[in-house]
Length: 231
Image (cartoon, rainbow, N blue to C red; front, side, top):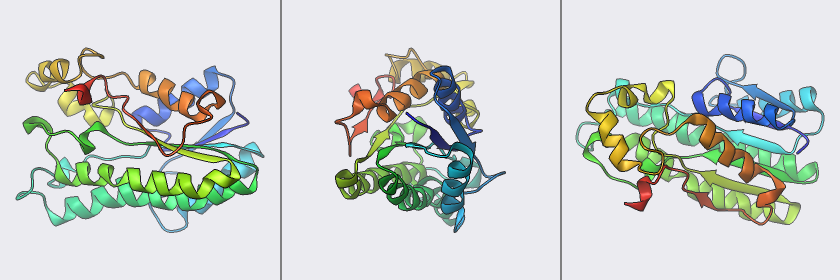
């Protein structure tokens, strides 16, 4: 790969992706809400311009932005607040739309490339301890975005895929990871990773999806979830 733009660069998975890219000798730049906020109008276009200025030619884009809405009142239907619903969808869903709208034409114009969007196994799993309707529905809405973008980009050599981890040991998931009750529960749910996943493991999957090794893969969802969806 010639270079990769990572949105959500300071988050656990985004930062791990940048470290993995660097270890592989692939130039990369990152943006986050303190530099260029792609959740805001015009932010995605500015991120593409920034990557072009910093890297020259780039052929990879990663969307690793995400937030939990629990502090805003996300939870089961019946208790989820309007504020949680709006903000979780703005950050976890709408920002993907904005980035894909900017990135797919940009990559097509430069000869093709690959986009990896980070989703979540919570989009299609149900568990009493991890029931958050706003977060789950926002992540579930990503696959149609990915598939339609992959369809549009295919003729110009642009691939778009979704990588969906389970609960990963990142600051966003610290509540669950460090909980005396939820920690053991994760060991049962994610038997392949023996509990919470490592961000580095997810980053390797993201980098593979970006690479030419996955050259025939587009419009797909990779369940890199530590075995959660095997249940």
